[in-house]
Length: 85
Image 1 (cartoon, rainbow, N blue to C red):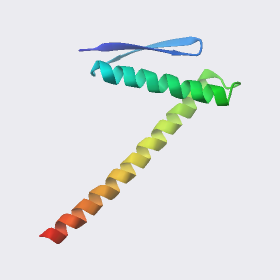
Image 2 (cartoon, rainbow, N blue to C red):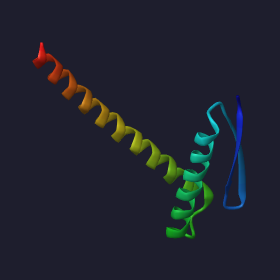
Image 3 (spheres, helix red, strand yellow):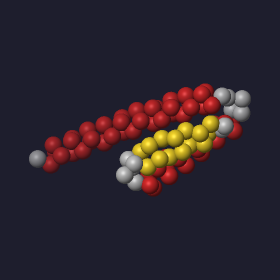
Image 4 (tube, rainbow, N blue to C red):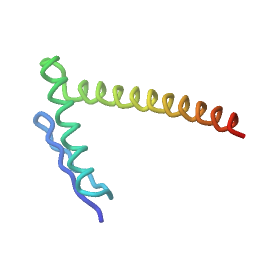
């Protein structure tokens, strides 16, 4: 079931649709709003676009780090499993 989420960031509102459970929608909205508020408090002169670019860069960095961690764990598991044979 499609869920609509409304993000209020600064003086702008964004309406998005997602096909995920409600708890995920709420978690996404809360996390984005909290991160936006934190960056805005640290850089009060930053525009909404600048804050969103920083948030996007942080998300991509986190994704790259997660991928690397998963790859390392996968390689360790493969090495372990090959020793068991």
